[in-house]
Amino acid sequence: MRKQSDGVAYFEIDDANNLSFKQVRLAESGIGATIKFIPGDYVADGVLPLLEANGFKCDVPTFFIWEGNTMYLTRDAVMKVLTELRERVPAFRLSFDYMSEEVIAYATGDRGTSGFVERFAAMGAPWHFGLNDLGALAEEAAMSVVDAVTAAELHRAYWPGRPLASIIYEHYSLCTLEPA
Image (cartoon, rainbow, N blue to C red; front, side, top):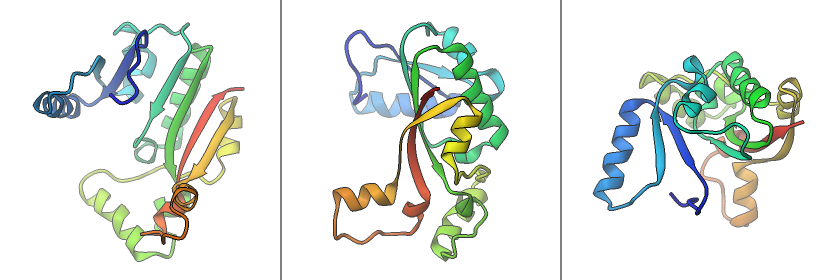
């Protein structure tokens, strides 16, 4: 909602129950959203078939925000999404977040971080994908890295002198890719 602008179409793909929850909360808060909510499984069904069935045009320059998802997927599923977008959308940028391989493997040496990941697994939402070499992933997907930063680097830049609450922020990154 914060990114709405005239002349721009907005789409969100998510589980039907999650979308329903979001729509109820928006309505309760009196927030109007000009977003096309699309229930579906973008890995199984494909991102673009779901989008195109709801009015998305592949030939329009696009910015994809893929947040809070990659860690739940396998590497193959992440590559499938990246490849699908690169092969069919000529002009786009894609921003997403990801955890390091050490977080996924419970190998940070920090009990708090491992406990955090374990709690997600206990809720039925285990993390599978971690990434330490964004450049190699981008190259394999025939994409280029536009920007990459850890949450810890952002913390230090915008809150200098304030301590990190957890080392997980050293392992949590945000990036933007575009077709090479």
